Length: 373
Image 1: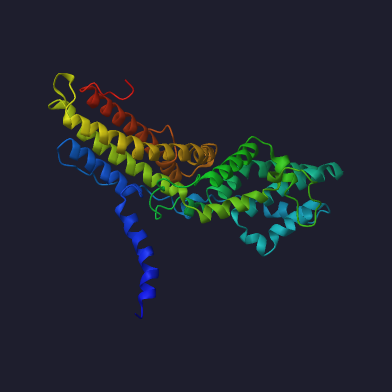
Image 2 (image 1 turned 90 degrees about the vertical axis):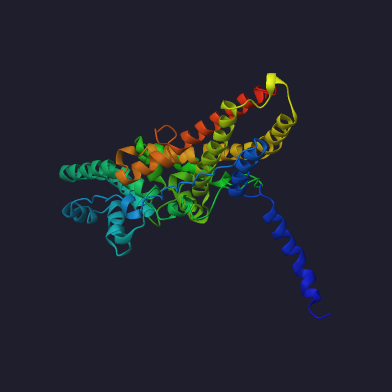
């Protein structure tokens, strides 16, 4: 019959969609909601699902970007006329494109300026000029942390990495969803740490002006900061940090909901009389292993691993720059990145997981079924 071929093609796809929709453990929200409902069911009570608080968005770019101080115009004009590589570096900054540099390019410029100015000094006999060069280098070193901040936390690309619009961290994902981002974070942290501790020359060496000699084969790629562009492109293409934040809030809330049910039963009539197992305790234990141990705990382990690999390095990249961190960002950082702040959502997640595990142990111990006993 006409159209039957189309139906045969569509039915398998529709079946996959239906099966996926019927599996409450395929996505974080239905899995965690369903877990609370199952705990309530085996404890013969009603589930109470608390509202999921909305995490805060990363502050707007205008609240993250710091104003970059400039050298005095007279000094800059004077240096632009001097006949060494610094002349070309300053000339690039004074060009039309130089006036609208993106943050990462501005950081490259600041490093090139420092290197070129230092290279000029041995070639200069004019004491007045040497003094001007030293003043310029000191000024650039002093303001370098601002350029570093803008090139990391002030870029647009990081907003996608932390977007909250992409739902929750995936359940039972293949491979490691944050592997590339984790490597990126480690490399960025190495550079930020080195620059902030004064190791400017190594990175400035690879930040020469166009046409200058490139580092030889085997030279450290990071010294040119070329890798940083690829890192920021990945930030713009992936959104795992935001998903992890969403999932941390979700899991914390639902674990606390389930813990409240467990505690309610513990504080009321015991699950088992005189410690002897019964039909209900066996049902409870079966659900504990089949759902909590086999479904919920693996997801919490995935969150913990991703947190260590991605969130903690990002927190370190922010913490290292606390001296220039804008106030609007500081409050967001304490809540969404810090591992030690009083209002850290990660500390709240740790507490929720610990309390939930203790509640399960206390409940099952009433029947001589304490896990690990």
